[in-house]
Length: 446
Image 1 (spheres, helix red, strand yellow):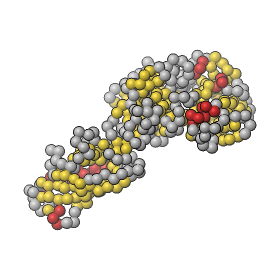
Image 2 (cartoon, rainbow, N blue to C red; image 1 turned 45 degrees about the horizontal axis):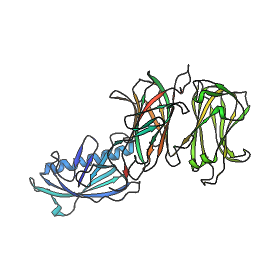
Image 3 (cartoon, one colour; image 1 turned 30 degrees about the vertical axis):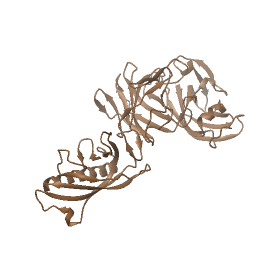
Image 4 (cartoon, rainbow, N blue to C red; image 1 turned 45 degrees about the vertical axis):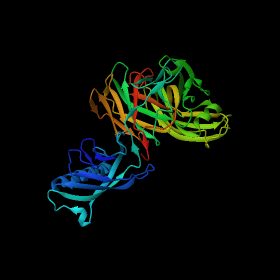
């Protein structure tokens, strides 16, 4: 058994001498069973050697524990890990340390610090840690509609339609994600447009608990009933947009039917509705509502959203449950409506029904991201940045919890982005990225 504490730069082996801190002699450690919450444990640590070596070793542990406490308070600095290898030849498993202290034994025979050259002591290392262990980092194999599962990156587009390979998602097979608990990921999204892009918004989501391979997450605007004019445009998903022209206070109600089979893939979960506009002007309000299949009985009304962005944008219209009231296989179809009050002149391209098994929004600051540079959202280490070659730039600010993957589930990760361009649509559908995803399997016991 091996046990050590590290911040990635300083590492001290508690279970024996590693040649750096020669005072360490051995430990008694029996991990507790975690349930995802934090837990507190005690490590019995025996040290022998010179007084100087013992003091050095215990001071190193105390500094690491103090750093862990400071990071928890400020969210700054390196994370500190308790790393455990129960069997020789295993990978180390790690659990984040949040606090702790070193307590010297009060037994005289266990505190023989007076023996200058052959001192021997026992101390208790009290550790507050995460209630899980993470295994070795692994790159997940990803597939798309026209690319088989593999590592090394898969190409996605900024939309999803019938065009060959025009996917804004990657799929992960049920056998890919190991462990027991949902695990955060590091997502690397490399700009492959061929020129620098000034990104502004990045939306990421996971669909794991429905039937992601069968669920239709895009509602094309031109397929809606209730008004507007379908207009051909090769720069839009499906090759069309819906032209909308509303005066001040004028209302429009667009409807889409979501079939019963599709509701069997949603399982009553909440979905965030993201609307992609090819162009839009005016300050309008919008609300997403859910009606019965006949469109006569209101089942759920979402929040009213003010739309002020121009030049085309991806607009967050809030969340709705699909279907309302939970899940049963006996549900009939429902009607999803987008209710808009003008003034608005817009070219509405599509709505994306964005699953919320995990959801991550990243605000970017508009600096040009070079071709082959990457947006990196690292849920493993808790940092988000833009990477160019080996340099990292703090040009991104995440919102919410890290994106997760789920053990034993066939799942899809969905992506949309928006740029700051004003002369062209701010969310070009032809923009491409290469996606790579890494994770560490999580489990409560090892």
